Image (cartoon, rainbow, N blue to C red; front, top):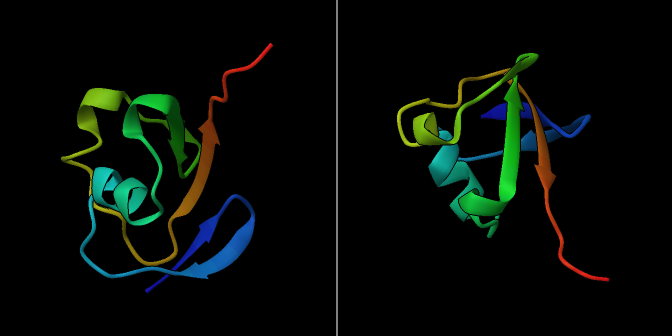
Length: 66
């Protein structure tokens, strides 16, 4: 299914939760902020929110360093 991920069209598996999508993308859900259709999701909802066709997702992940 198609979604817009960080401004780019992307094909992703259907039926994934936000948590599942992050795992599929090999991102640690504890280090990512997710905006779905212009709404920031609470981390505790990642497993319950299902990604749908044409969703617009912005993922911001934190990187440590100095």
